[in-house]
Length: 497
Image (cartoon, rainbow, N blue to C red; front, side):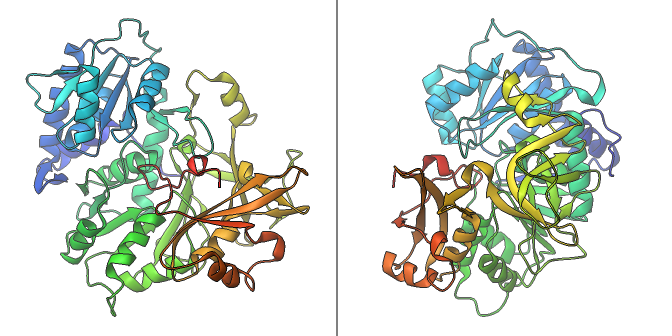
């Protein structure tokens, strides 16, 4: 197990500023910030937070898209033992209000330099300029905010991360410094990061994947992160072709966009990439093979969730896989596959994935019932995800337990149907759900983002590939599937069908 010598996530930056102050830490809009410069910016923001009457144990909400100011404020909040509540500026006004109220944030800060959406939210909220800090606007102080207790050492909560709500209402996940540091250290080591690496930072830092594995894991190694306010396939492809990056991490939808741009290339793209990784949602085997041809590299895969900060498993750098397994549990993390009676299933059988390790959340903020349902005796987290283990112990995801479809007495795993649909050359991506019928059965409904395909064409395509009970009763075409800023498809926001 990879342990960390640090007590706060801000110690990652302190370490870098002391040992290699002139090394590049972040790149934003063509400007490079060294570790020493980022540390000075963090100190200035820590003073700003104190001036705004943010105390240890207070929650401070950052409405932003990826930027240097956002990173510095995250570290500043950690340095004064406040909880950061980082939310994406592309959320609606109502969504932001809900999260601000639930978190009880002492202050809401709007980082408008890299985000017109944040500027719009700031204007509606009547936020005022922080004179010495251009581009940062502060909402009024919430005098009713009560600080949470400050726990000893790394056990203190560093971040309150709200889930993306793929199947319901978002919940506030309390992640300690210890859990974030554990994943940052482990992620850095498993990717083989060195100070010479240059990683892509287009995944939202407001999402746990972008926060921990991408941002903290990169800086933990003393490497450099190239920030992008939001994913832009053309800019990323240009950066790869220009040799600006050695590491790319993203969600499958991101790689699908890159493929669409580069589909005319007969040869692998020449680049300085040495590692590419997909996570955040199921990886389709056809997409995996196409991406590997495009880059001439293995596309590594992994699995995690907000409640585990996020990494649970990952394919190994020295042992890439030809299948779409999410790899072995990372060192220090153990897993179980559990049946309906709470007992381990037989080897190779599907069940709910349970996880135990130093990466687990402290619980859901202000939701004792949900915390009790997720955190089970013995230190286990019931993930709500269906999985099975191969003979070598590698994990294969089958979907959410809530998404399991019962059709004619058979179990239908949405990922199986989505994989078959996505294999069609005209399908960009798909989402499969079950809809209840009056007789108590469920029907399979597929939502598809495609170019030039018809329902009849896809039905013919699926006939030899899926058993009759797995085939969709309806295929609904959409210009774009609803997605979170991280790129994860939000099935809860699909239309009635």
